[in-house]
Length: 502
Image (tube, rainbow, N blue to C red; front, side, top):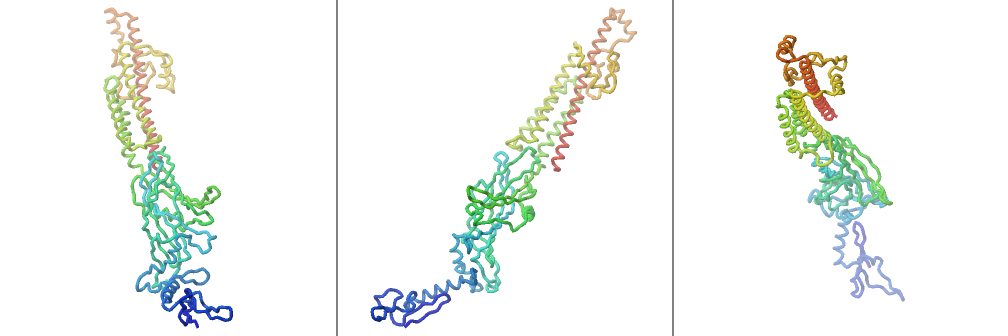
């Protein structure tokens, strides 16, 4: 005769009489009927009375922790949570499934929602083409093996579980160049319906194609590509539970660094990646950042502009006084020292627009110094032995000084006979101060009495005419170079304003 012990999941059959010592576990003494042996009805779980209690307790615990409901829904029994807190054993059956993807039907892919929050832009290395940033990667997916009734669990709708006890999707950033150093003791939020939310802090050093031509007014577009390392589209599909503008606004609100870079916006695309015969799902985020140029304007552009402006004002110094050349040499040396000191603020690679600006400033200052040396030489030569001016240079001089009217070429007294305007820069003295004045009729008679002939007076007038031509030519060169300085400074200011506002 057998006694039945009923539990929540199984029925255990116990024999009424002691088990024969020669029989195995779960066997009772057979009754012989002819040549056949008659065994008990429930020999599979037949136990002795002393061995029933451990099996009874173990089966009762398993049945209470993870019970099967309708279809494939698994419900966790959280009775006693209000007295002793959350019981680790209540989720042990879920933890045991950690090595496997949490699906009931393995042919159905797991849907993982991916988003992130950019909290800091740490460094942009133009030489190595790397972007170092700090972000929080947000993952969300469903685990059908986790479910409980909040009403039976003292209103518990969500709890935290150590991430090391759960299956985690192997999402990574394709552009990342560093080893993942995320701490392992993170937690995940689990809802009563089995939805898991996992936030992962990451310091990412990623490849970014940087264009520094418009430095320091440059904008960069870097890419973060999230994809699975092992699971193809047959096993995992990626999606988003947030809109892109929500990610952008959240990143702007929580960003911690107010340094060199600022976040402009984030866009996304969802192309598939084909590797051999395997097709992987991925989400690409395009992060647009812009450099704050105020530091470079104050430390680079403003001092350089001041030095160039002072060099332009040096044209008001008289060329024949000999003070202009030493002044320009001093400015040129100071500008070179300035460039050496500010070299650390410039990009280490490439040729940005600001480097072209500095090169043009240096070229203008060198050209101005050479022009000053040449003008000083011309004025010295004109006062001693002025050479005749070539006809093409004379014509060019007349065209540059009076392009809209017919200028007479016959030599007359002073600048009026040349058709040349009076000096426009205060730094250049009038030609009459460089050579003695031409004698008048009365002076010619007195000089004639002292041995001067008419031919000598004509030769002296011709010499003065040459001096006036060379002096006027030097004045024209100063005027043209001064206007070139003004044009360069105006165009530089407009370029800086335009790049800053775009």
